[in-house]
Image (cartoon, rainbow, N blue to C red; front, side, top):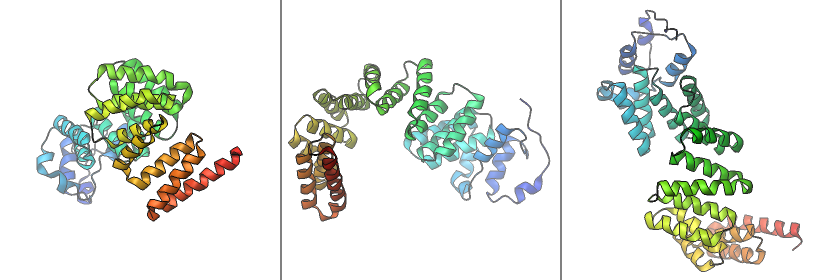
Length: 321
């Protein structure tokens, strides 16, 4: 690759708003090096420090090598500390602009922050250097699925799965994407969820995901023990509790469903959820009864339950019931 063109430009740093540390980090990489090629222009744009960043970074971080900065950035990313992750990845890229791992980490930070546009830009930049980069392809697939582009998500994840057939994250993402597509893909998703369980039998997410697949297939009684197993591993998981409550209700165990929904949502919301589930099943009378109970229990909840009642009446009129 053509080397970046270097030039002497002392006034650039004198006018910089990011302070002495930003100057120090840039100088560590190359003494004042405006970049000429498009790739390095993108990196320079991504690693511009914001006002106040230099105070957060401090000399301690500035002295770290890029490899350690990247390692710490990934640790902070795993902990959900997105700001510190961003700062460490940015500092690593200031020192080593061609490094792929911190660049992919920046994309994960943007994705976690909900900035799909910036995340996509970063992941595509990663793929310019590494066309089979796992993190970048996975990130692009997640963006596609979140935006309802299931065809693109499916294509990307199937490509990754062919490269990493034992990677449980990729397998789960592909299975969840199949579940999101709907009925014609549910049977294709099921063995993938089962494969994840076989590879990681002690993780609750595998049981929850397979249970959810069974819910979508209408196999409610089979879903219940899977959600129960997930809860035995992680008793505080609200998502799993709500899934189990849904399975109970659809399996004609309303009391157990109500009890679980109450622990996660409160009683008015529990009745509203039950009403909504009955409505999706075409059980109009049961649905109306649950919505009215939600209205009776909480005037604050009146608006949502009332809207659901209006929707229920509309569905009833359309069906002629």
